Image 1 (spheres, helix red, strand yellow):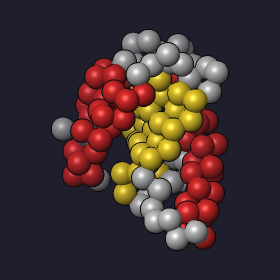
Image 2 (cartoon, rainbow, N blue to C red; image 1 turned 90 degrees about the vertical axis):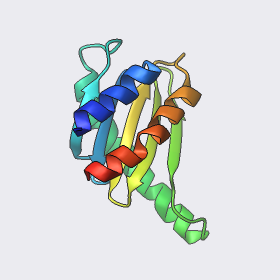
Image 3 (tube, helix red, strand yellow; image 1 turned 30 degrees about the vertical axis):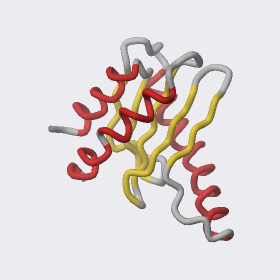
Image 4 (cartoon, rainbow, N blue to C red; image 1 turned 45 degrees about the vertical axis):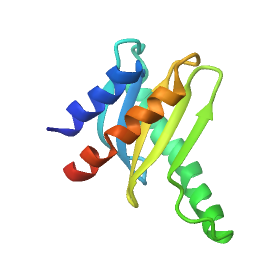
Length: 122
């Protein structure tokens, strides 16, 4: 099993537009684009990883300052899409984008369902 096949299961399972496994520095390790994605989805995932990676880092710092523990999941709704981020390990994040009307609950389920598989592959 490879990262790509696991990401494909997540994207196909929840009708996501794209999924990527990225380092906390925003550099993609693997990414998959869904059938509903536009032509720019692959490039957009790289930008999302860098930009939201910084926000995720700020959230981790904020959580540390209030002794809230590790940040495990973040969800952001934008006008053009939904972005879900889930920590795989301290240095790796799973990013998933959905259409604005996508089912975020189902997406979170598929992310959790395949989290162990991704951890094993790292």
